[in-house]
Length: 99
Length: 152
Image (cartoon, rainbow over all chains, first blue to last red; front, side):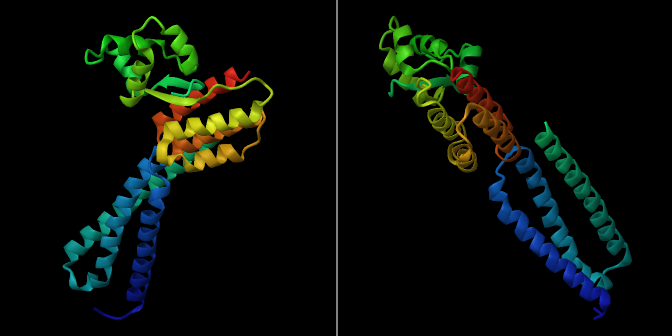
């Protein structure tokens, strides 16, 4: 494991993701159900998945390239799903508030 | 049971009536039919006087979760807004239980005119729908509109 700029960025990303995990878990009690509450559960699961994925990034140099590519691809895929869910949720909230 | 309390069928009560639930004794079924979501216990007792031990049947329906209080009868215009506001808070607490905090606070803090309360009910409906439960949001809105329309 080399100590370089990418490692620093990875550690920062992990810290931010842990902060995000803390946020989704602590704010969850404020949205027990409804449109937001149901989506929140999915977002929480995705944040847990990202946290695990991000934790692997400092050890990328030690992984076989094939496995590394699969992990990166999965993070991208679930990242895209996360964005779709978030955009749809925001739009749904706007619809509810405007309706 | 408080004679001024208005009773309404819960979703379970409506379902029991619709599917002719055979586990429901005939007396309770007849009592359940009389519940219209607008009448007070006092009015219901008048209407259900032909049903044997009607007050006990009402208590049994509440205990079974088939019927729930949705507020108090709205007194004549003299007390107007304030009574209506507190009826709406009671309704929110009945429908939402321990999750009623924010909704009850919002209703309590709203203005007391009928228009202000109607606007608060709409806002609360959206809040419930977004953050608590979509089915209970519909239940709250229907009962709240009933209360508001009865207040004239």
